[in-house]
Image (cartoon, rainbow, N blue to C red; front, top):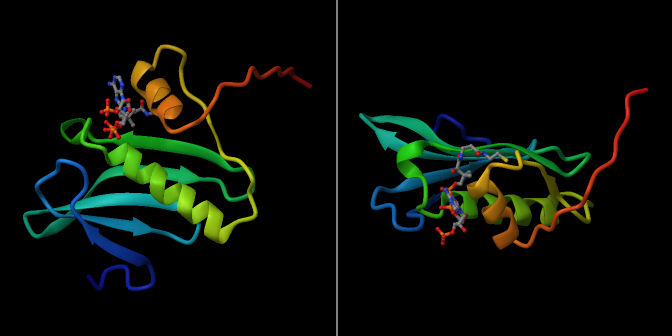
Length: 121
Ligand SMILES: CC(C)(COP(=O)(O)OP(=O)(O)OC[C@H]1O[C@@H](n2cnc3c(N)ncnc32)[C@H](O)[C@@H]1OP(=O)(O)O)[C@@H](O)C(=O)NCCC(=O)NCCS
């Protein structure tokens, strides 16, 4: 696995996925899970954390890999990363009100909803 020698790399089989998945955490706070296909690593799930604001973004799991616990695994890694490498005391994520899956995921993971007021300046 010499293609990202400077990153922390874990090998694990996540959830009910039968294929081995590789999890990569980068120093700037993004977590990606790869799978090996035709001798090439391909990303199948990813999430980013803004290390200054604690904002989580770009959460995406490839369709065939959904409902296998990969988003849960991404969050577990991002929570551990934030605790260990930042002084953040909370993380934030936003989603479209109709995104039932993302809303349930966030609730399941202990996120609770705040109403946000904003205005143009
Ligand atoms: C939302 C998304 C990231 C979930 O990823 P995932 O890997 O399938 O989620 P997990 O398998 O880890 O699911 C964890 C929990 O989230 C909830 N959940 C996930 N997808 C769900 C869905 N489609 N409907 C209802 N609940 C869902 C469930 O509570 C699930 O637990 P369970 O499987 O034990 O019931 C994925 O569907 C996705 O990439 N969607 C498109 C992009 C998107 O909406 N991103 C979020 C923007 S904020």
